[in-house]
Amino acid sequence: MRGKWVTLLMGAVLVLSACGGNEEATGDTVSAGDPEKIYTQKCSSCHGVELQGQGHFPELNTVGSRLSQEEIEKTILEGKGAMPPGLIQGEEASAVAQWLATKK
Image (cartoon, rainbow, N blue to C red; front, top):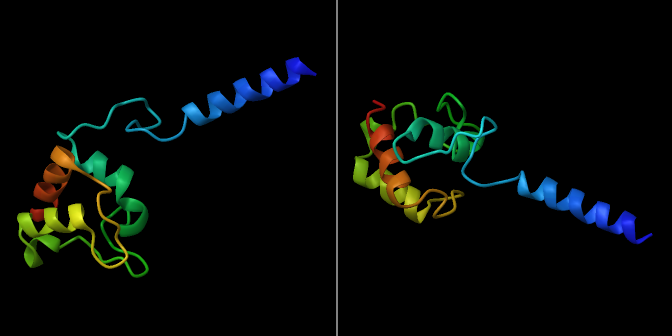
C-alpha cells in the first residue's frame, strides 16, 4: 500500500512540475527580448492570438494609435477593467508595451 502512495505522490509531482513557469512547450524560455512570445503566452487567451480581441477584452491591432507606450505599460502593470494587474512585470512589461505601441 505504501508503494502505491509513493507512486501517486511522484506522479503528482511530475505533473505539477510540468505546469506553469515562463517556458513554452518547446522548452524555450520567454525573455524580455521577445514581446510577441510574451504576448502569446500571457495575453492572447483574452485579447486573441491575432490581437483581434474577444468577448469584453478589446482588440489590440491598433492600440498604438489610441495609447502611448507609457499608457500601454501602465495598463499592463496596473490592470484596467477585467484585466488584472501584474500579469506581466518589469522588462517584459516594457518590451510588450513597446511592441504594442507600434500597432497602429
